[in-house]
Length: 358
Image 1 (tube, rainbow, N blue to C red):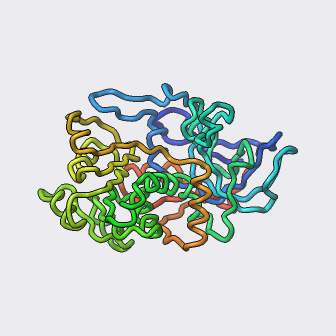
Image 2 (cartoon, one colour):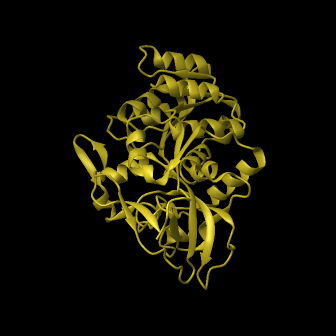
Image 3 (cartoon, one colour):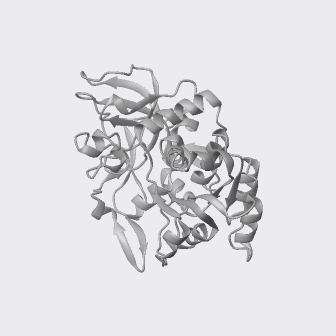
């Protein structure tokens, strides 16, 4: 099999060839058909998150070890089963739930493995989908994708799940009655826009500095797309939503975007932060209860939420976000393109069938 690995944090990914593994126990071997390239991959590749004030959270602090094959948005075909694997069949096309926990702690038993204190996430703590094949620990985390194209299905494992879980944290009455503000129109933001429309939200206002991405948001059905660098950006957003905002989803997570989200909220409003760009803000604590606002972080989502999301996509024909596909051997350049802001929507790697594997 072929994989592209982080051998050294910040250095270009390196191709690695090795015998294709044989699944043992409950393991399932997938032939990768599509692997999304995510901003989390950039953080993992560089080896740190920006905590603001010159502070960093390193991947070593999180327990990440090298070498590591990136890629946590994985759609593929089942090609081999361990002797104890159940629930899938060879030839079945599936989406892998990557946010695996230990399976034993109380968090995992509550169905929240994405919050497990000893995670085993694919593409972060164990080998992921920047490869011709990937070994999944258990078939329980595999979801049939039916006739969904793998390149469309793969991003639902992270960008789709992350935004779906965030949307589900919004007060249902607010979601039904009020426009929602989405900060950022990258892969996460455009996915949030698509899902909010599918879930019946009356309107979405997108905040995005990049002109091309603002146009992509408008093409995707946004009520308005506002440049946050405009002097009257907050006023433009409030005009588009009809007043102060009840719900803001921040898909960037920079200091400036979090502050903007807070400034936009009406009394009783919600800010849900899913982006990991980094930074820090100052917060006047009395204003939190006085304004009755809620500030919530939302980290990916549960397996049950991913199953619900795929069911929604298959039943309601959720509009796919713009997707660019490229060959697996371009993985090192794909990360650079994403980091440089050259991608609109999602970039997806697909192994080249003509390239020989070991």
